[in-house]
Every structure is written in structure tokens, then in C-alpha cells.
Image (cartoon, rainbow over all chains, first blue to last red; front, side, top):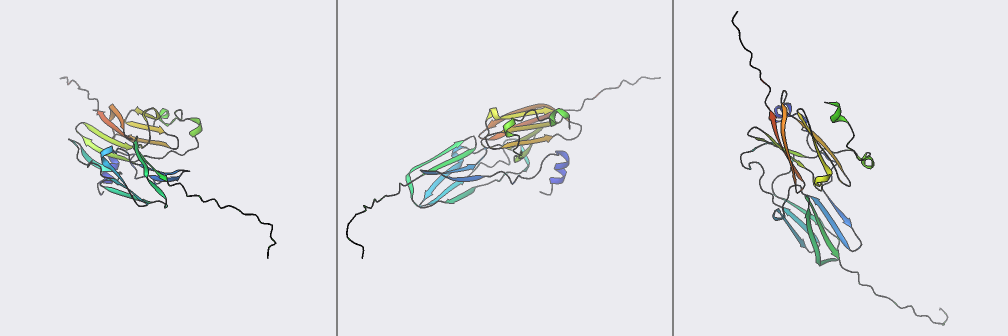
Amino acid sequence: MFLLPHLLSQFTDFKVVNPTVRESEVVNKTNSYAITIKLPGAQQEDVQVELNEDVLSVELTPKPADEVGDRSLLWSEFETGAQTFHYRLPRGLNHEQISATLNHGVLTIEVGKLEAQKRVINVNQTSEAVA
Amino acid sequence: MNETIKSKEYTNSKMDNIKPVQPKARLYRIEGGWVVEVALPGVTQDQLKVEVEGPVVRLLAEDERHRYERSFRLPRGQELDEVEASLEAGLLTLKLTPRLPHRRQIEVRSA
């Protein structure tokens, strides 16, 4: 990083990161939870999704980007290397109903909820006097 | 910077109130130029615009919830000659090739 001032003078408009971009979110839907994670440049084979009890894990193992072909990396604001994200979801997940889609660098995972078991209680009516 | 590049013509009126964010980037040196990779997750080709003016390449993108803006300037005295842009899996790759400064040969006459 000590090279940065020199590079900045060469290539002026580089500024470091933008904290306002949200990298992931979890949405509570009626019948499922939808988790979206921004993974720009990720390919299908770079991503592994696992659901263990109520913990959803997403493992990202991108190819090293520093030396591809004859290009040399000068500097990067990207997070590099393997990363794992964990999300603890509420109980009552339907492990049979889970899908993961990678679309334009955005990973969307939908985990279904188990239907709540309903018990209907009958209300009895009596004409006896309440003690 | 030039006036045309500063203009706001490109914006979609309903997105005007959304503050543009600067997407993250990565810079490579290649023979005869640079490669810039810009993270634009969720952005599709039709939501992206790349403009070139002199030494500056500028990208503008809008999706349903975000506006992205960023520009890159070549080192002093260099103009952009060729810019190749490709978008794959939310990653924009710009290949920048500078035009070498114009050289003029001056004829030396003997007095």
C-alpha cells in the first residue's frame, strides 16, 4: 500500500471503498427467507452454499486475480482470497426447499419456512353458571 | 474536466434523488496500457454506459436501487485511444490503451 501515493498521482481518480454499498441482506418473506449477497465476478464453481441446522454458510473461493496472464496487479479495493459468510436464521426452516441462484454477480438464496403446525381448539359452550 | 462529461443528461429522472456511489475497482498494468475491473453486481448491459473523453473514461450505471458513477483519468499528457469494455457476472472490465503523445519532426535547415 505504500506505493499508493505514487500510483494516485499517475492515475488520479482512485479512492478507497464506498461504505454505502450494502454487501448482503436477508429478507423475511411470507414463506421463505431470501438472502442476497453481492459477489461481483463470481462464477458458479467459486461458490458453495451449505445449510447446517439453522446456519446458512456461503463459501467463496475465487481464483487468484493478482497474476492472470501477462497483467500485473497494481492495486485493488476488492476483497481477495477465500471468504465465508454465515447467517443464523430463525428455527423452523424447510431443508427440502432451498435454492441458490447466481445472476449478474448477485447470489440469491431462498430457504423455505416450515408451515407452522396449527391446532384448532374447539370452544365449548355450556349453560352452567360460572362458579 | 470537460463540461459535457459533467452534464447530467444521462440520469433517469426518478433516480435523480439517489446519491451515486463509487463502485470498487481494481487496476492492472498490461503491455501498452491498463486494465480496470469495476464491481457492478446486479447491473446488466443495458443499465451501463461508458463514456470516453480525452484522457478520461467514465462509467455510469443504474439498477433498481443504486446509481454508480466513477471515472478514471490517464496520466498527464496521455489521451485514450482505444477502450474495450465488457461486462460479465457483475464485473466490468475496461481495457484502456493510450495514444502516444503526438510527435513532430522538425526539419533542421542549414543557414
